[in-house]
Image 1 (cartoon, rainbow, N blue to C red):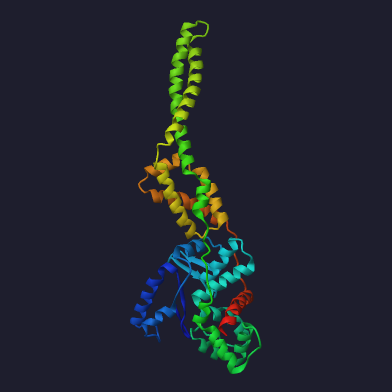
Image 2 (image 1 turned 135 degrees about the vertical axis):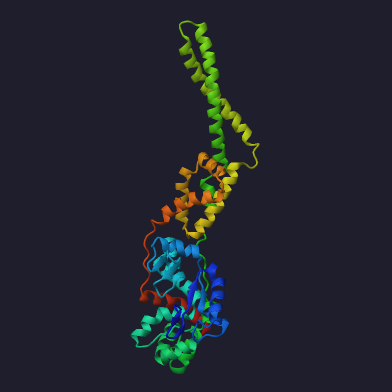
Length: 382
């Protein structure tokens, strides 16, 4: 099977919203004898690891090819990481960079995500190149004792002394301490991970697109056009009468002058009348459509992991298209939410496809990031 290695089942990272289904599927495979060497259904939870991001978030990142090593298989709908760091760590690093974080902080964020998802497996993946240089085989296993046994006392001492403060230790003591450090529960217990898409989308949306002002502008425009038309007709009639009464003005000229004057007067009066009537509206169609637009934008911004500046770019672009006519079309549509989705996604994707390409850290850079995080954990666990 694809999830088997010479050392046994490898850990498979799945989207957070597909975790339960993936556990069930793996249990069924174990039950049917499709996972060689595994008979305990409980092992499904050791094989399947819950990622930090949803399928939609990972897919939207992968589709645009803006993160090195994250690939989208459109035929099978699969998101594949070509890096040993895993999908959550890679996306976390990229989003941190897009959010304006510096390189070191982005690595720390990625390391926290990788440890939370992969635990010991993430550590061995990051350390694999270092262990290979030492002539050792880094088996991808979940047992900390097994890892330490493969590493041996020398490599264990190198590892544990790099991740601890105080006097160096060696031999059996180093192996014991390294095993303790590498235990998944010891690692993950000391690691916290904050979801990066914490932009206040609603406030940005409301701060730049006012439903009250848009509705008022729509109503005033309609009222002014209507009032102006009525004023033109009334003014033209009066002007024509004036032209008949005063021969040197003439009927045609009188109608033109009267029409212009009537249009300006009628439009002005109608606009003022509209202003006074606006206070009578409690909830109108415009407010309902904008509420749906706001609600969908919040979800889409999360699905695309938009940064604060990206949200602002989308809203500024959206303002030009979000007119009274657009909202009327939305209200007349059979599916208001789908209409909002189509409108918003077009603006969002126009922004995200311009994201800078993020290249993942080298093995050496990631090891330094891992060391920094584990030093904090090692001080409290060793």
